[in-house]
Every structure is written in structure tokens, then in C-alpha cells.
Image (cartoon, rainbow, N blue to C red; front, side, top):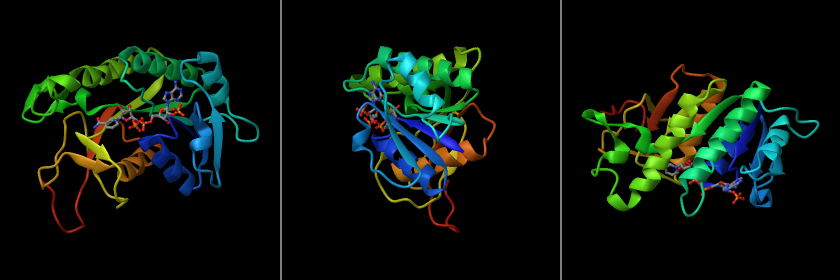
Length: 226
Ligand SMILES: NC(=O)c1ccc[n+]([C@@H]2O[C@H](COP(=O)([O-])OP(=O)(O)OC[C@H]3O[C@@H](n4cnc5c(N)ncnc54)[C@H](OP(=O)(O)O)[C@@H]3O)[C@@H](O)[C@H]2O)c1
């Protein structure tokens, strides 16, 4: 496949790009400063600003001889977090991918998940997981999911990470859920960015069927998670 990763120099995008390329997929590594992407076989760095819809459309159409993207992974984030940036970037990518017939996997936020034990409460509104000072960022992620749900034409899936997502080991294992925040048997809602990337590329290769799903770390085979 040809997989475009938008945000390919970021924590998530760099790992998704490496995972996709490592499995032999042609990978378009897109960001404003792609020179910061580690160059490796199968990876084509492309400079693009996601706020420029024409440039995004052109980039996803692919530089020869790579060809157009079959799938697009959206993993951008701005500092400081900006709801309008996230919503606009998501709409731009969904529009461009719909024109190409490419599937989009959005790496969203944990805030868009249901809170464990309170199905009518989103994590973004749950002070157990989101302190007041982070609520606006969490709500930007729920707005991003809303843009996907409202899009008439795009083929999309949204992966909400667990509460904590950070660099760590690649075990190749994870537990998958739907739209409720997961915790492991150790009580931690956590996954490494490396294992999240495994889940992203697994979903791109073999769609699981849900529009919104999550993952969490899991232990060695034979040790059960809760
Ligand atoms: N627990 C959670 O819910 C959780 C935790 C962490 C992350 N996340 C989500 O995961 C996603 C990725 O986050 P991250 O931590 O990997 O972000 P990150 O490390 O900050 O990387 C952001 C990426 O976006 C690119 N980017 C920023 N502005 C851009 C623009 N205008 N045009 C093109 N590319 C642009 C950056 O590259 P350039 O600067 O070169 O353009 C970079 O590659 C986000 O949606 C974030 O909310 C969720």
C-alpha cells in the first residue's frame, strides 16, 4: 500500500511512518519540515502545510513514482493546542482523501472516549482523567471526532489513545476496545507510541469495522489483563 502520514515528524507520526515502512509499505512522510523525518527505505518525505488544502490534495496524490495514497494517517497537533487548527486540518484531509478514494485513520484524543463506569460521560468532561486546565485540549479532540462523524463522503476511522501515550518499548501487543477508555490489569490507561503505531498499521491493513476504537498496553502472553 501507499500510506501517507501527516505529522510524520511527530511523536506518533514518526513511529507510524517507521512501522508502515518497516512492513514494506510505500510511505509518504508529510509535515511542514519533513527534513526532520528520519530517512529510510520506502519513506518519501514531502513538505506540506495542512492548513493549505490545495497542497494537501497534491501531496496525497503522491509524487511520481509513489502514486496516490491508499490510506492517510492524520497525526498532527499544534502548540499551543488550537481547536480551529485541528478541526480545519481534519476537514481538509477528509475532503482530499474522499476525492482520492483513500481511507483516513485519525489519531485523535482520549477525551472523545466514554469514561469507564459512566457511559454517558465523556473522558473530556471527567475530572478523574482531565483536569480543568487540559479540558479545552480534550474538547478539541471531541470536536475532531465530530468533524469525522459529520463528513458526508469520507471513509474514516478514529483511534483514540488511552489516557497516557508516550514513547516506550515496541512489544507488538495491545488490547483493542471500542469507544470506552481502557485500562490494563495494572490499572494504567497507557500505551507506548510504538505499540500505538502497531495498532494504526494493523487497522490500515485490516480494518476492524468500528468507526471509533481505542487500544491499551497489554502484558506478556499468558498473563491476563482485566
Ligand atoms: N492521550 C492522548 O489522548 C494523546 C496523547 C498524545 C497525542 N495524542 C494525539 O495524537 C496526535 C499526534 O500527536 P503527537 O504527540 O504525535 O504530536 P507532535 O509530536 O506534536 O507532532 C505534531 C506533528 O504535526 C506536524 N504539524 C504541525 N502543524 C502542522 C501543519 N500546519 N502542517 C503539517 N504538519 C503539521 C508537525 O510537524 P511540522 O512541525 O514539521 O509541521 C509534527 O510532525 C494528536 O492528534 C494528539 O492530540 C493524544
